[in-house]
Amino acid sequence: MEPFVPPSQRGATRISERVVAKLAAQAAREALSAAAPAPLRPPSPPPPPVRVMPHATAAVRRPPAADGTGGVAAIRVAVELGYPSDIAAQCRRVRRHVARTVSELAGMDTAEVAVDVERLHSVHSGGRTRSRVR
Image 1 (cartoon, rainbow, N blue to C red):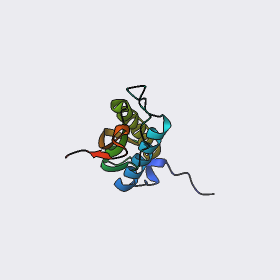
Image 2 (image 1 turned 135 degrees about the vertical axis):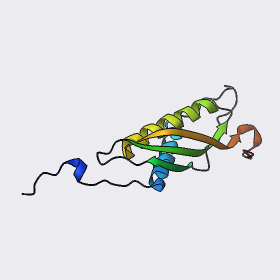
Image 3 (image 1 turned 30 degrees about the vertical axis):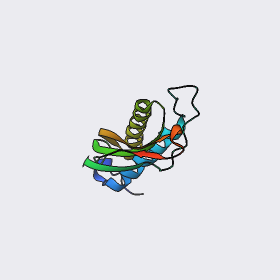
Image 4 (image 1 turned 45 degrees about the horizontal axis):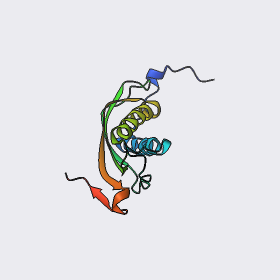
């Protein structure tokens, strides 16, 4: 039988920025697909489905300690949304879900979760997209 080794002496798993970014992108997809956006104008048809999946970047400011706590990451998620819809509510939902998912799966708090809306799809434009000017 092997002797008991306390968690602080067992070592740690390093979670790369790339993994945190993938977790964030998946969480953004989940947040956007969980609830259909509520249109601002009821008579208009529903917005077209999102065509480009969210993508994310992450900067790990402090990796988690050996016990899996204390990590901090800054995350930027780019999304594509239907319009008209409550864009602010969708961004809040993405921000909350990304922060919760990264905390649960990677043991990291989020110093910030920035949500960039890269494109809006308007039901009135016949499927054409409007890109954000940077």
